Amino acid sequence: MIVSYSFVGIFLALIGYLVYFNLELRDTYINSPYNQRQETYQERVIKGEIQASDGTVLASTQTDSEGNEFRLYPFENVFAHVVGYSDRGRSGLELTMNSQLLTSHANMLEQVENEFKAEKNLGDNVVTTLDVNLQQVAYDALGSYDGAVVVMEPDTGKILAMVSKPDFNPNTISQDWDSLVADEDNSSLVNRAAQGLYPPGSTFKIVTSLAYWRQNHTLDGFSFDCEGEVTNGGYTIHCYHNTVHGQENFQQAFANSCNSAFAQIGVDLNRSQFRQTAEDLLFNQSLPVDFTYNQSRFDLEASSADALTMQTAIGQGDTLATPLHMAMITAAVANDGMMMTPRLVERIETYTGDTVQEYRSEEYEKVMTSQEAQILTELMTGVVESGTASSLSGRGYTVAGKTGTAEHGDVSQTTPHSWFVGFSNVEDPDLVVCVIAEEAGSGSEVAVPIARAVFDAYYNS
Image (cartoon, rainbow, N blue to C red; front, side, top):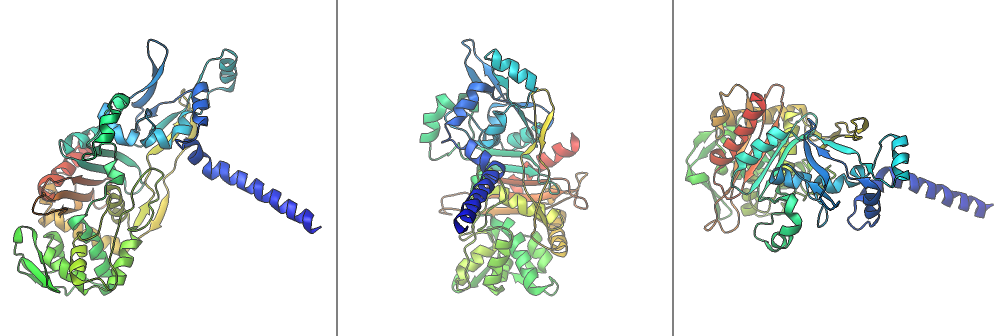
């Protein structure tokens, strides 16, 4: 009897695993570049299109004069990283949605007829959340700078634009492969929006402010006399350009992006609780996305020295973040504390336009309270109204944001990275924009105008 029950248990476990595999793991294994069965799919199905949210074709399968199939990318470099490539391996949506693109849900009679005629069926199309206009504007606004722009809806998690530079032309990836792989300095194949790890600079003061609020339960009573620098433990932090801000309350210190004030705030915080706040916002944690990314890092312990603590509080030290992650944190602030799961896909359709599968917006986690989100919104609004992002004020829409000027490498030999994170229509947020321009200088001078171009395009379209 025991043996019989054991066999029944094993049988049920196998059935359960098969169900789990088909529901949860199937696409992961099918999309793996090591899965040789993908070649079999391509023998039977013409790979479907990748489309923008309005149906504009971003990738399609064409046939040359000799009957050979190839993928065509009409926008060339503009969507290179997010759409990806399908020669010399796969990346981007070409990788994550490969099984869907190589599956056909065309009319069953049509499929049977094609089988009899030894003709391929047309694969399903992937309709993305990407907005062609916003992607092009972000791409053009980033210009010759290396870096990234992420644009998303805070209440849905839809990614409307994802730009990374330096880039490549996916139409010529095979011809350019050797030079792209050999160019370690530029790393053009890396999607900096999701994989680029940068010191977040003063954009991280959003996190430091949240940690301060959680430990003090108020911003009232804070006062700091900025003399352009502050010293603790024998280490000195300077304000940008050694600017002397004078007497400041918390709101003024945030709007002015005062390094001295926030370095002192960091020293005064409980460091273990500071780390917990950062990890609540997914530093050192996995992100809820199904595409390739790097994990943001926060390295501060209870025993950390004042020098590292001061650096960490202003987004320097060992802290590193991806633009995608900073966009997600900003979106959570805009969305009353709720972080949505970022997504790039709206639905799967047959080649005739019939819906096969719809992807819905999903709440990931309430990473801060509504009150905390409101406090941060007010601080970020002050940055635009009277602080380092004031060039975004008076444009027919409201913005709450934070600039950043992040030092990196040998500071005597490098120009700082330029950051901006923010959201528009503050009372009922529409759009989150995150910008990083590598070695471009101050956030207010470079990243803010890039973000402004995106916001303007959204409201003027």
